[in-house]
Every structure is written in structure tokens, then in C-alpha cells.
Length: 562
Ligand SMILES: [Zn+2]
Image (tube, rainbow, N blue to C red; front, side, top):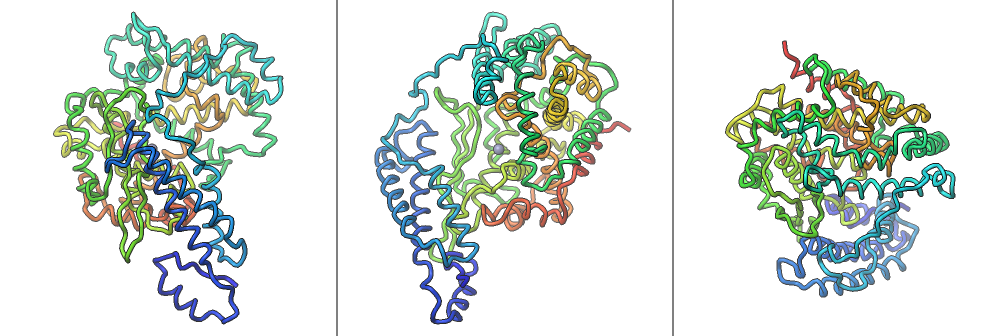
């Protein structure tokens, strides 16, 4: 007998009617699951608070609860959940309840481990990892037991070490700093030196570029593994139902569209980011650090998403020991109480020393995550990020990418740069990801090829970049080593975002300079489901069809000079 869950509040009345209609012999329903789900909600609430308190580098919550008390409360709640899980009946559940129970069990195993004590708040307290030995025989490592994991881990450790210690002029810089200098260094000779400062990272991945290169060993193992797993496409793209046979054609069409909107002259590899950085440089003085939050808050308020009312919290101050990567997480999840929804507490973490178009874009993206999770309306078991990271990242960008519209820039920054410059800024990073995806597909197909030659071919054809087969300048992304094939997710993600944005405009109208009904409309169609529905279903119902690259190609072509 299928028994619907009383925990699903939206269908509460229908459930009640169904329960009344049940025959008397039906098994006693789910006090069991109701208890489990309540205990789960409680344990997660304490865990969320614990996580954000640590991420803030604080020793107590904003309401003054000390970390040690949080740990104790969490462990008690976790124990109650464990007991409830041990006594829940595994049979007689509806399909949805069964899935809810499965999610709870999985999360319990994976994310709700017991907290031993109240470790110091700042991750700086963790001991420094041992420096890896980076002079090694990659071939021997590859041929040893579990060669792929051993090699990949060693390469990644050496990549990280190199990336943190890049000598430049009289300083030691990190990889992200080098990247951030390329678009703003006006002197071409100095720009080339900045670019070449990345050489230790290239070496960590590709050795001397010869047949003994660590990457060449790794790609052979990865190609063999993918062939054995019959998994030509990254699983992230697979979840969204992307046809593996179509993907390479999509990538090429995006690169061709980029080629069509960029000036017909050869450039050097160290000029690519600089050329794409024209919009950033043009808006630099308008995007000060002081305007980041006000512009962010104003834009989302104009869209009907008042971050204050939604309980969004921000921690944007740089701090020693703070996670260098921006992220958003649940400090509390929306709860259905007394017939109404109590807001959750999304937390946005980032570190901004300066204002820049990139930083503002990142903040709008993180707020996109925050307003998404504030809008989830489902039972506690499904109150979580969706089942696809690609979808999660995509919906965070639906509003954020308006930053590249001149009309948006005029309203929120007081001035604008030409559309073509803006579109090149918007897509330069994306077409690089697309180029890496194509590179990985081709390397997996011909694992004995010379990666420098494959890269020179792709970047020469589509970016008009002069070939430098003596430089392994493709070797700057950690994903190429720890998750070979993964770059495709970024490419497919960008294609999906353009599609979702286009469909939003088609169904609901433009929202470039605001639309107070936008947030409610988006919430109903894209934000509210959590884990209740598969992302693929949510996307395809929204689009009325599977994802297609057409919208991205059309968006890019707006920059074509007549
Ligand atoms: Zn994100």
C-alpha cells in the first residue's frame, strides 16, 4: 500500500483526504518517517550554524551561542537522528517517502559526522601539509598500483605548490594574482613577463613537455579508464541529458561564434586576457569596493528579492585563514511552521580588498545562490541544493550576467562600455573553458598526441593566438589533473545559463534594469524544488525542450560588428 507523507505540507489537505480513505488494515503510517525527518531537520540546523560560525572565523553565533555549545547541541541532535533512523521501518513507504529516507540516510553518512570537539575557528590552526616531492618519475608512478590516483594526487600537490610560489620581479605571487594582472597590465613587454611567470605551474603539470611528461602519462590512463567505463561525457553533463555525440559540435560552434566577433589579427597568448579586459578597465573607476554591496542589494531589490528581508548574511572582509574561494551556504534553511514559511539564513562568503567588475560579478553570482536557497519550498528531506551542480551554478547566474548589459551598467554604475567589449568580457573566460573542454576531448581520443600541439591548433584556429608549441601554457587548471574531462561541465554550464536566461526573457520579459515580479516568478519555476525534482526535469519543463546552444550563439553574435 502506498502511503503519502503527511510531511508534505503543500498537499496536506489531499493527504488527509487520502488517509481517511485508506482501508482500516493499512499499516500505521509513518510516525516513523515523520520523526526521522524532524530529527534530520534539527541536526542539520545545528550543523548549518556550526559550519557558518567556523567559516566566519568566529567563536560564537551572531546571537552569542558559543561554538562549544553548538557542537554539543549538534551531537545530541545527531544522536537522536541516528536512533530514529535505526527504528524507521524500511517498507510500506510511498515512493516519495522512500526517496526522502534515502536522502536522509545518505546525508547522514556523508555530511553529518560526529563532532569530536570544538576545533579552533580559523582553518589556519590546521597543520601545514607536507611539501610534496616534485622531482619524480611520472612513468614509474603511473605504472605502480592505482597509478592514476597516485599520479593525479602527486601532480595536483606539485601544481598547488608551484601555484603558491611564482617568482615575479622581486615578489612571490600566486597563480590567481598572476591571472588578475594579465588584463590590467598595459605594457606589452611586462605583460609577457607576467605570463611567463606561470612557467613553474606548466612544468608541474607537463614536465619538460616531452614524452615523459606527467600529463601525458595521466591522459593515457584517463583515456583507458573512460573507454572501460563507457563514459565519454562528464557525468555532470550526462545528468542533464546532454547527448555525448552532440557535445563536440556544440563546443566548436561556440568557438567559431567567438572567432566571428573578435578582430581579425593574430595575438600573443599573453594578450588574450588583456584584449578581453577592455570592459573591466573601462569600468574600473566606477566599480569601487564601496559600491559592491549597495549595487548588489539594489539590483536584487529591483528584482523583488530584498536580501535583507530574505535574511541573507554577508561576510566579505578579507581575513587571515579565510577560505580564498567565494561561496554561499545555508546558515539556516527555510522552515514551514504554523502554516507559514520562516525564512532561512543564507550566508555569502567572499574576500574583497578592491572593487572590480569581476568582484561585482562574483558578488551578484553569490547573491544569486543566496536568493535561490531562500526560495526553496519543500519538505525537510529535500531542503537542499539541487541534484546538479551545473544547474545550481547556472541559476545563480541568471540575474548576475545582466552586469554585461550596457543598460544595466548605466543604471547601476552610472556609465557603460560598448556592448561588444562587454560581451567579450562576458565570454572570454567561457570560451577558454570551451577550448579546454575540446582539448580534453581530443587528448582523450588521441592520448599519444603532443598536448602543446593540440592546444596550439585549437587556440590558433579560434582565438588567432600565435602558436607557441614550446610553451605548455594550457597547463594552468587544477581540474585537468584531478578530474580529467571535467572542464566540459563549465562549457555545458555556460550553454545552459544562456538558454535559461533567454527563456526567462521570452516567457517573462526583460529584467535588465529590474522587475519586481521576477523573483516570485523565478522561485515558482526554478528555485523552489531543492531535491524534490531532478534538475533535468525542472530545466526541460522550463525550456519546453532539452538544453541547446542556440541562445549562447545568438547572444555572442550580438557583438558582431556590422
Ligand atoms: Zn557559484
